Amino acid sequence: MNDPTMGQFYRRGLILTALLVLVVFIVVWQLVSLQFEGSIAAETDEAPVTEGVATPTLAPDAEFAPVRGNIYDCHGYLLAAASTLYDLGATPGMGDVEVLADRLAALLDMSRDDILELLNSEGSYVRLKRRVSPAEVDTVRGWGVAGLSVDPWPSRVYPNKELAASVLGFAADDAKGYYGVEGYYDETLAGESGFRDTDYDDLGCLFLRVRPPRDGADIFLTLDRNIQSVVEDALAAAVGENEAERGHVIVMDPSTGAILAMATYPSYDPNDFVEVDDELFVNPMVSDHYEPGSVFKVVTMASALDAGIVSGSTTYYDSGRIVVGGQVIKNSDGNAHGQTSMADLLALSLNVGAAHLSTSLGAYKFYDYLHRFGFNQPTNVDLAYEVTGQLRIPGDRDWHESDLGTNSFGQGLAVTPLQMICAVSAVANNGLLMQPHVMDRVVDGGQVTEYEVKAVRQVISPEAAAQTTAMLVHAVDTVLTTAAIEGYRVAGKSGTSEIPVMGTYDPLETIASFAGYVPADEPRFSMLVIIDRPQKDHWGITVAGPVFRKIAREVLTLLAVPVDSVRASLQ
Image (cartoon, rainbow, N blue to C red; front, side, top):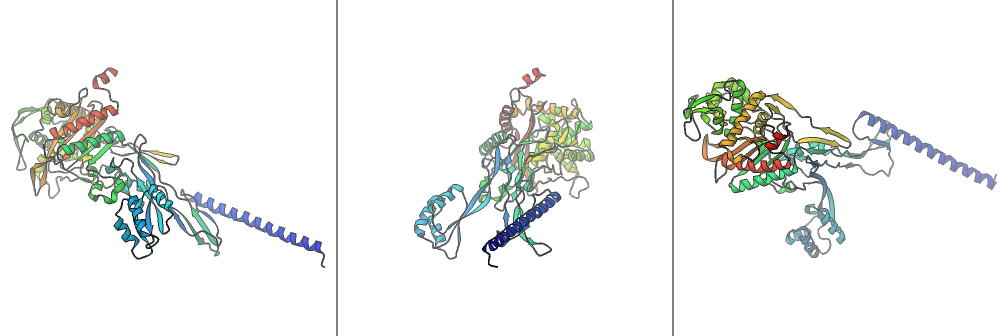
């Protein structure tokens, strides 16, 4: 049959049949894809993996980098942010290398000769500069020069440069965090990479699998950028004025353990960590230890008051010397002070009096209190690389009875600055030791996880804490006046510790420190100031006390803390 009408009808039928088969195939494919996606999403909290029948035109396998989470201070100020920088490369011998070297040298602030040497080198590719900014990339692209290439790299930007570097740490080019918050919370900040790849099922069919990246969560810290700035400025000035080697300051809320500021000087810019001496990466307030000196007498006195071996009205006779374990201990001023009260023991910082307290407590009770205050153990702060300090105790091979005397005034033991301020903060907080922390909350999309404040233990009774506070106020009002602040009751204690050298102590190399809290009766913050190896003066009272006062005055203003007379009238 050659009927043209029937032929046309037959062709139309074939077309419709083919279209119908195609539609059915697409619907079935979509249903299968949704089934795979739904089953995978139900089995895991991760981003779902989408699967489907692969075709010859599939894109190649790939990994998709997540965006690293931002870090903010307690007010929402940005401290660290995700960014993109670039590697600028070139194909040697392409174009007029002389002209190109001139343009690149001016743009990248590099040596023209160095660039020219790279452009004339052998090989198919050379890297001209790492970490090129987006603005520089736009300029290079605008030239339209063949042979130049730009490779993006995930990067990290610290808009405040050196501010809080010892707390933040840094994220390197491998997208991993190191030191500080970046290191401790690396998994939280990093997120999870996505991917696109292919695989075969049991029937030999090729499938495409795709999972989008899960971006990192944002972290809000307890740090207050304004307080941190005040602390860093004052610390840098103090180190310079005293010709010191370095210095550290910690400001803490004693009622919660929240760290409001933590600074060390000299510091570094985490934007340029590649160019920095890696010794500066370590946060000495959690990763280093020192002999605290007479600041430690706060712990000894609080322990003695809590144990009931002395009270606020107790006196003792200070002969100017005491022998403990065969070692003669003298007061730092070399004097005997006769009949002396507990308050004056602290105010005058008498080593003989401190040793009298520790020996009266006895080794078992004294070291039990040191353990209760958190020494020789981690504080469990959420910062990378915390150490525990060094404390010999009875039963250790290297412990000697004389340690019971010298440890009472902070000699012969080593603590971290964070352990020291936590112990002082426990006294400020009615005897309750809190776990220190720098994370306030984590924001992951719409989910917010707040830090749960943790009390470690009741170290001493509230009554013993109140008695110790009264003595520390007396010390500031009578002797340690360099730390006094008009309108506020300040509780504090200075320390001057000699630095051990070759099995002995160098009297000319000291660590000057001051620890205290304000207002004394209802503390809003506690603070430890350490000035390491000052050269113009050596005493905590004259070197660290004024730094404490300078910072505390500004922090009181920033926190809008009313003077004590106003506070009393409002109660």
